[in-house]
Image (cartoon, rainbow, N blue to C red; front, side, top):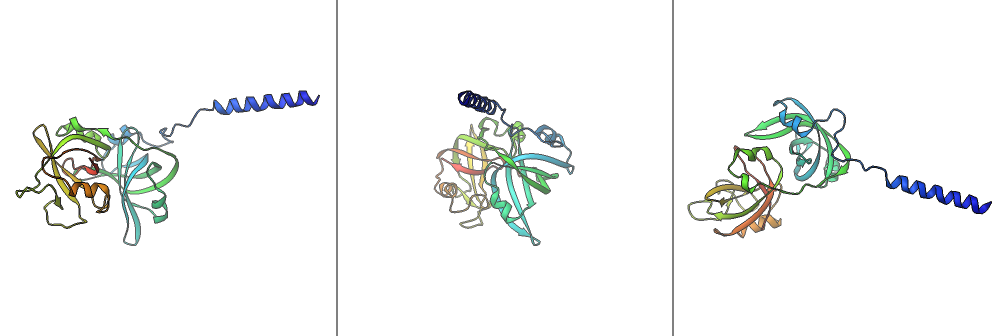
Length: 244
């Protein structure tokens, strides 16, 4: 009798393990009730309320504005990207928002000099983690289709460093060269005879980061591959996070 009971218990455990093994995994990209797809967000009118679920890809910074902590984040799902600008956020929560953290965000779709962003937002930290691979947009440089990739983590391959001013500098501190070490770095790179401007945004990648040091070491004529976020300012102005 004891053997029969033991055998039955063993069979129950086997069936339980099989059942657990076949339980479907939760789709981290499935949208919750009332949450927009990226296509719906893209189609939403400016200044309208939007609700999205997205994943932190990089943090530009946290600071206090009028006594309230705010965060600016580059975020993305599998279909597109969302730039969260000055979102009220505690420092404690900001520190929890490591790369890949899933957020539900409710705010207003806005634009500033061409950059589409979400402002006046509230958030909820959700379960789930997703880190985007860079999408190669090299062939889209200079084309209207590039705007469809706004704010996404992107790569740019096989470009040539060009002079940033009449004196032949490979980079400038600030857009007009009036800055100093620690400020944003601006530099030019060309592809197929056309020249484009790139930026190392100092809030995102400060002077002690590898990319900041790499840009300072560039020489005109260098061939480079780059990665960064496809920020927009009166046209594409990628915020570069890696240069090789």
